[in-house]
Length: 289
Image (cartoon, rainbow, N blue to C red; front, side, top):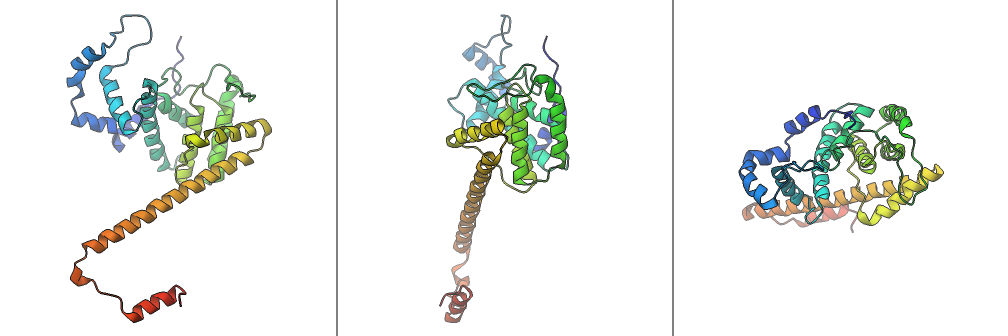
């Protein structure tokens, strides 16, 4: 018997609509239903009469492929496309939550997880794990499923009192991924929660690049096995610093480009050369002799 979902999505889907959902925007421009017959014939979509997993709706898949193309996931398996759409919805939810003065409870964390897996793995989206979890080739042992609810309640209490610092954002990531409350998607949920706390604190999103993934996983595993998060905190603070530098560089380049455009748009008669006195004063202000 399929376990009932613990967390509803209706409120968050309404907020997504109010905030401008890209899929809804596409629907207002394109009559996707007009493609149904063509897609059904071309893709030979199942009518669901045979046993097995319920079929994907061809028109819905068409929308997803269009959205996936904008997220640079072309050539990937279907699940990767679905995960890209789920990530879009979860990120939109995160930015909405960042603007709200709402302390996250276990319920909101479950809603976040449901968004992360709502299309790619709907059977387990938003539901606590009911079996023991583990990671291949790792000695880390996660809490028993029966311990997850009270551990999540304790975590939510800690999160409510934690100040919005990078250290606490990274600690929230570590605590959630160590509880490992869900059967899958724990890393994605932990990183999304971390970024929510960072954005609320006025910082930028932090990403773990593919080339850094092994170092990232090793740092988490070391902390879980030894009870010392120093290596993990150092890794994440380094990534935050690199991200902030990237944004500063982007802003600097944008400012230079805007200044160039402004100069080019000025009428030539309004421009004048600096006088010798003005140049001397500029040099003096900068300590140039």
